[in-house]
Amino acid sequence: MTDIHQKLPTFASLEEEAAYWDTHSFAEGWDQGKPATIVNGKKYTEGITVRFPQDAIIELRETAQKTGIGTGSLIRMWVLERLHEKV
Image 1 (cartoon, rainbow, N blue to C red):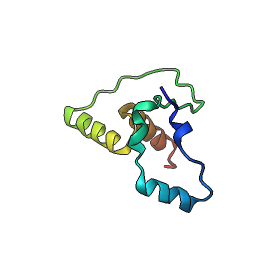
Image 2 (image 1 turned 90 degrees about the vertical axis):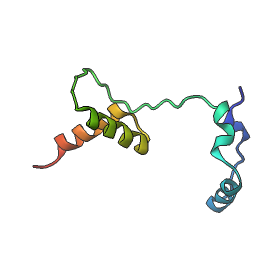
Image 3 (image 1 turned 30 degrees about the horizontal axis):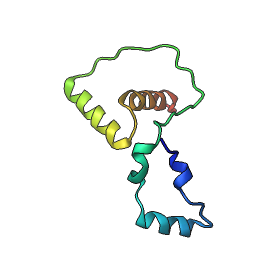
């Protein structure tokens, strides 16, 4: 397996990089990369089960997919945002 980063050129400017991506696709190297690992330093120490109606679950999954994050991450983000709002 080749490291996709070894195939990318070094760009002198943002304009040069933009011109490159106008004629190339990120998909060209997808089969050569490794899954991304996201490390944010947070420790989640306990899980909790929350039940939702089926239509809400479908909507949550669709929203998470459009956002590009996991359903659990989306729910956690929304709950933490709400907890930290000034009431």
